[in-house]
Structures are given as structure tokens and as C-alpha cells.
Image 1: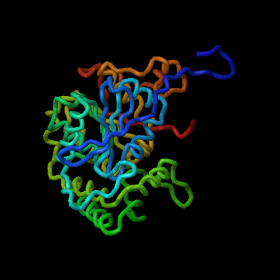
Image 2: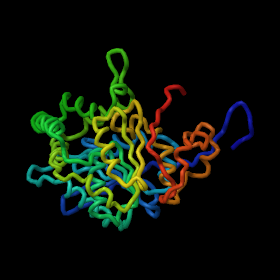
Image 3: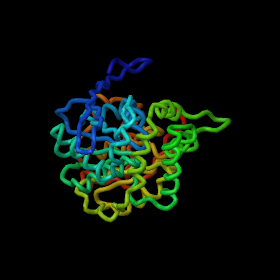
Image 4: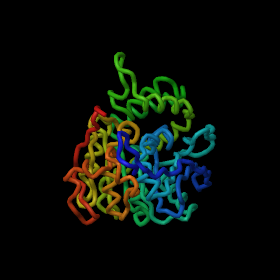
Length: 348
């Protein structure tokens, strides 16, 4: 920190955002993994929602300097893309068999084996959260913790199944057409972010639109078929998980009720819920700052901390003066995160 004056100088650790791409052959076909950070550090595995990859699903979170420093200070991040969702992906051959959600969960285990990883932290959004939770149930010893954003946990309701079936038919016959993109954006974002005739759509929505243009419709269709074909209601087995869980859900998410249902099934001693107001499903892009304080205190239970150089920032959303007293009760996982609601102030 420099001398006091009219301006303030803040020393901040700036981790590298350059990653390395791997294409890994598994029993279920090849899968693309983008690796960011020092591979000697503990692993954080991410899995995105339908039609997204790490660029369109986690970029907003990692573009927050405090969140980026917090995560890359403690982890090497392994971004797994659903098959055919990586940047520049070609259309998967129609001769390749359709994968189930169990296949996708088992594919994650093969990725961990490839990198020689034992137990990992996991972060997933909606469909990706379901895949990672299923992975945690099948491979309990290999998951240290779950950070889930607007997760699914039940078999599809008739409403969801029918909605997905319409979307699936559109993808199969028309590809990533305008209607498909509009339906997907409503899945990800709140009405506030999507804008209206009087209010422009947010930068996050505009960026997501551009990235959706790069997706191959048939590849997205294959992932949707897996998610819509899930028959397993995993909520009954959630209490058997051996790890702690932190769940974020946007108040305006189509999956808000399901996320609350999932939280009710988890062991309350080892789980926490953060409801983010005025937000859709993809909290990582729409309101990533709402994740900072809960993530920091969740990771404290694992002996992980923010970089010391961030502690002097009076404007940092990780500053101790911003901490809710509700987050400070010690519990068996190092702290107790009570269900809270967070709101990002519109005033800067």
C-alpha cells in the first residue's frame, strides 16, 4: 500500500488467466478440458449448463479480481466441457452413441484419472451441477466439496420434460436458431438482465448470445437428451454424501424450487443455501459478486484463504466489514453458513 493521498493504491495478486487445452480420450468419446493455474495445487473441477462451456458459464465469476484471486490462489481449475461444447467443436458424428447422465459422470472419473487427481472440489451450474452431484454420489471419496449453482436433483417433471422436448426438436431440425437461443437465455438469466423495449439487455446476456452462435445444434441436442432422459431422483441419496455443499440459486431461476428442495434433503450441518435476489439461474454471470463472501467462508472450512494482499482493499467485497454475522457461527465444517438472501446493490 502506498502513502496516503487523494488516490489509493492497492497491491493485488494477479493470477495468470492463460490456460492449457487438453483433449482426452475416454470410454465415452473424447472430452475437452481447459486447465488454469498451478497443477500442483488442489483441483477445482467445473461443469457448465446446457449449451455452455467455461467461457460462457464461468467467465463472469473469474473476471471478478477478488474471485479470480481467491480461486486461483487455492486451486488449479479444470474446466470440463460437455462433449462437443468446447470452442471450435465440430458436429459429433451421428454414429457415436448418445451418452446418459451416468456416462457423463463416469467420464469425469476418467478425466481425473488422466490428470492423476484424487479428491477434488466441484463447481457446476444447473445441468452441470446435476452431473457433478451424481459424480459425487457415485465416487464419494473423490469429492472434497460441492459448489452448486441453481442445481437440478430430481427427475424431470412433466412440464420440464415437455419443455425440453420442444427445445430438443427445435435443436435437431433447426439447430441454434433464434427461438432456441431465446429459450436458452430465459433459462439462464432473469427478466431484468434480458431487458425490454425500454431497458437494454445486460452485457452478460449480449456476450452469451455471441457465444451461443458458436455452438453446434446437434451437439447441444445430445447433451439435452442426456439431461432430459435422467430417470434418477438423486435427492434421496444426498444425505449420504461425504462432502460439504454450498448452493447458490437465483431468486428468479426456473429451477429455484428444485434448488430449495435439494437443500432440504442435504444434511444441514454440512450444507448452506444462498438465494440471490433479482437473479436468474446463472449467478456466475449475472451476479458473480454475490458468490464471493459465501465462497470465501465455505473454503475457510478447508483451510483455504484469500491472498493476503487483498486484505487491505477497502472496496473489496471480501472485506471483513461486509461479512454478515450470520456467517460466523462455527460448525463441524469450520463454520456454519445459514440460509441467507443476498442482494447486490445497484448503487456503486
